[in-house]
Amino acid sequence: MADDPNSRPVITTASSPYLECGNSSTATPWYDKESMLRVPKYLILVEVILGLLVWALIASTEYFHFSPFGWVMFVTVFYWLLTLFLFIINLANGKIRHIPWTRVVLIFNCSAALLYTSAAIVEAALVNQGVKGHHDFNCWAASTFFAFLVSLSYAGSAFFSYKSWHRGDE
Image 1 (cartoon, helix red, strand yellow):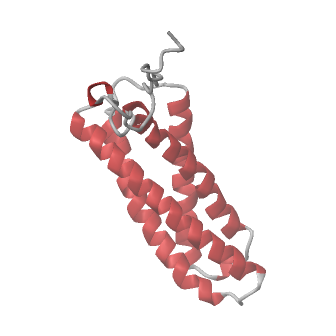
Image 2: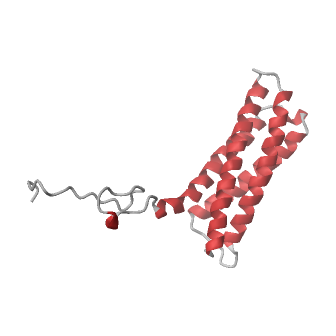
Image 3: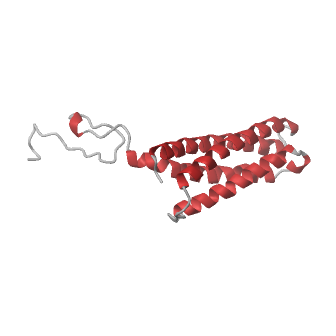
């Protein structure tokens, strides 16, 4: 059978996000639904790691001379702790029965996206207060970049939370 010149190799792509070549009736969709369901879990990990970078970079400077950094530090540390808490609950697959998790996570992600964006904008406005090439300036610039990335990841999480809430997942 293997030596038959008319036989084509069979490629199984049950978990592949790509279409099979050939017969379209056996083709998988262009995306893998299981991997799409894991994206919010990856976003939580991104939010924890980059959020830590944001507030650690600011904390390593003399930010306390500029009062708007108080707002930035409050938002970054507050949402980092809450995200870490949600991440630990998610890892343990623990759910408190009487809490509507999809609604709670949707509200959390939407508020985090809005407040983190406001903190990133405030921080971007304050970067010029530092001297270019100085430690404070470099840390603030890097922290601003990561703050905008965290804002985008919270917005992505809010999108996936909305889709989950809209489907009625509980």
